[in-house]
Length: 163
Image: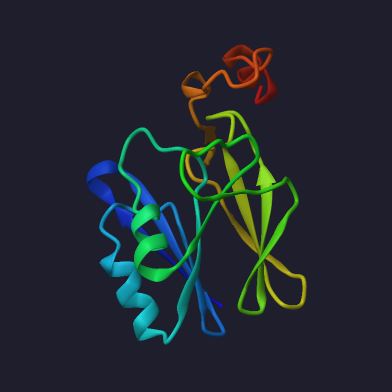
């Protein structure tokens, strides 16, 4: 398995590239998608999925361009309601990238649809998570950005769940 972080310091953004056995997935891509497509071409891989950890307010995602140019399926977590073709995954749903699995872990807090993706190898060993802006080392994402798609889930409830 190849996992590569693509960090853009000027906006403090990390995208991730996962490749295994000729298939690739991109997590939280920036608008400029050519670098991801170049990586996949170099690895002789097809970009199968674009996983979004949440709807981004701080940068423009390249997910629609990756769907258009690479034929990738866009995946959001539970409660997401995109206005374009995308899969809204269920908590615990598994997606295959080559011999590896990507497990959906619904982690609302930063936003309602915030989702963390657990990377699992072909032997069932868990290798890490990609959490977007939900979790940081020693901190959590801002819950005040949550959209009120479910009336009784408020920023206050999100905040208390992390204390």
